[in-house]
Image: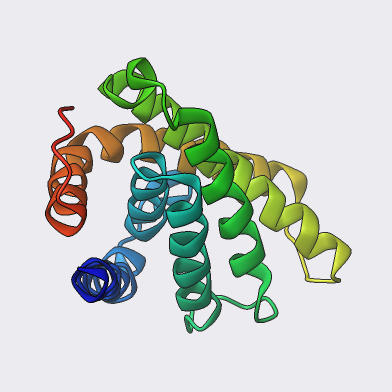
Length: 173
């Protein structure tokens, strides 16, 4: 059972990572675009227990740190996603009103995505990474949040089904 859960979860995350790197990153979308991999990670964390969400955040963070499109130090995304994954699962775990309502999940994922990007930018600034202008950064943050709010309702049923498949849960969204 343990191997099935983590093996299937790993395959799902690798598949979404390849889709993100090969397809989504190649699209030129206005106002920054979106990250289907980050949406997958945050929805998966919201549907999981806090310990599982932290482990998922760790694995997803390692993949993002090793991504060719990321220019930060190794461990940067890992730290952010472990903390955000644990937090989103902690706030939604045990609250069926939060986990069973698609609108609250969409809102929670959108806010968590915005917090993750702001935390990445803020900690990147502290680590000495080069940044862009304030207006460009603000446009990208707002645009990415809007894109996340648009894409999450489309991806939520598929991600919830994959989560149910991996963990044999019977959650209804």
